[in-house]
Length: 287
Image (tube, rainbow, N blue to C red; front, side):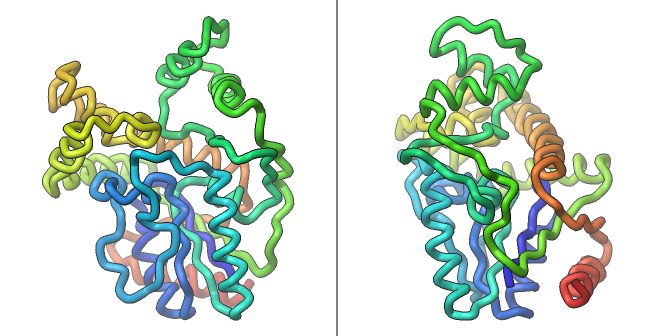
């Protein structure tokens, strides 16, 4: 059995994954693109206590070296197929929808290159990246064309997408959600908590090492604080920008997931999360 837990940041994916992993004796495969990197912890809300549950593809690459969706597909499938051959249950958890699609669906790559949907970049930032390769007449609001253009420039159209065919059986797609106002408040609160937990020190250490890689330039919480350390914006402006970009990212996550996957959504009960857990368990039991 494969259980996929997906949804925007701050809805309880990690908590649910640990509970279900204990119940079903499952390993967890990370599907958060930024939690791949060893040095990015606070800003990615990386789990600090795994409660003895085995996690895969977590903190496996230095932030100085990019990790592509092609590599994730190759590494993830190797792990997934091995676990399934041992009759293990598997939980895939994270908010990077493209990673989950590449892992479980018939996504094919022509060569080992980086390909992404750039969810962590705003339209304006995407346009600026595209302009680095020359002039463009693509409008800033045409996100689909901007993403296609940037991938083309970076990769030479290396991806062949057959993404509607699910390659595995007995897969449950669990989506966690809440109303927009509550979600945005949780996102804002989480950013404040990250600052209190030492996000500035985490990012300053990378900044002082002069690390300027693709993960740093795309990860929310890191790219904004780099602007602060570059004295381009104030700290308050950086924190506000992190919150705004996180909210926008959550909105794009919803859109992408709903367009690309057949997900069973559960409205999270934050006052009694056990009720949400029981609803998910009942769904798995009866489907």
